[in-house]
Length: 377
Image (cartoon, rainbow, N blue to C red; front, side, top):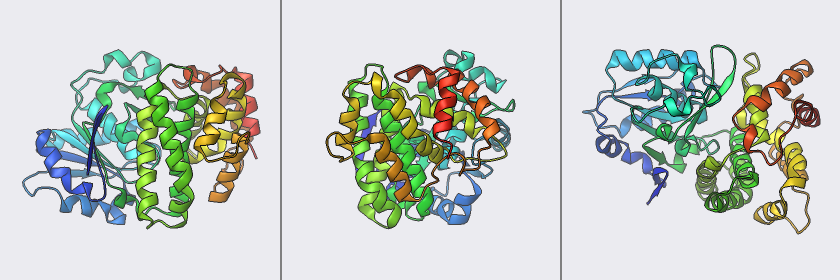
């Protein structure tokens, strides 16, 4: 069992779920609200969590997390938190449940309106250490939200915005690869590509942070070597372990900053009628963005190729495109159901996203539109 202290405390290994009551005790959480979704309840994973919760803990469950977490859901969960007299949160599920848990932890201890805490609204400095204690238990290997300082939420005004603060970091992450064994193959592929996108975008970000870059390269190496195995055989213990580690490393690294892939995928994810999967969007957008950024990143493309096990001089953007195809992911935004008339609005929203500023190049609205067109197949 590895106990890692980097940004936050991580309990990582098969069987780590058994430590949940010990961590509640350590954090003085006596009445947690479990924030999750109906899929986790139906899968039996919520029951597994309950098996390891001390009988003396009073807890309630909020399972209304939508595919892209919303302000409305956060307010509903916060109301339940207050009614139950909860004093902490256990967020269990994919990135949506974990991000929603962070939003509830914020709203439970900070006055509204919620929008004032968004990064693009100048909200970073308004988030204080009063945030309720949060334990994060990922059941996918992709977002890395369990070690991330951000929560990305769809607001009531329709915008999908990031809420960023070191105080939003979960107090502890419980990473048990066994919880991902039942993940369907396509969700394994999509969340795995999310982790790969995090590692690549962080590595290419122009900010100076060599430790983050080293972590990103290690995460990319692990994910590239194991994503096909994990997708093909969900019971492959070694592949599942390495994919969960890669996902965690991607988020550990993206404290350095992301880029144009996420600046586009965030507003795309806010298209309510489509409910687009974030990791799949990142996978589809990544080849065009890598191609666009290549002139501005020096030898970093070659270093990405090496980490991915590609031959010298390989076309990394094409390799990502080919990997998406091997994994059975959609070939483009059109295949995902994105209407052509939505592209201009997405292009106009992208420069306003908090990830835009840390891309190696600063795309104009016209260049963002071109990137979207390139991914629209």
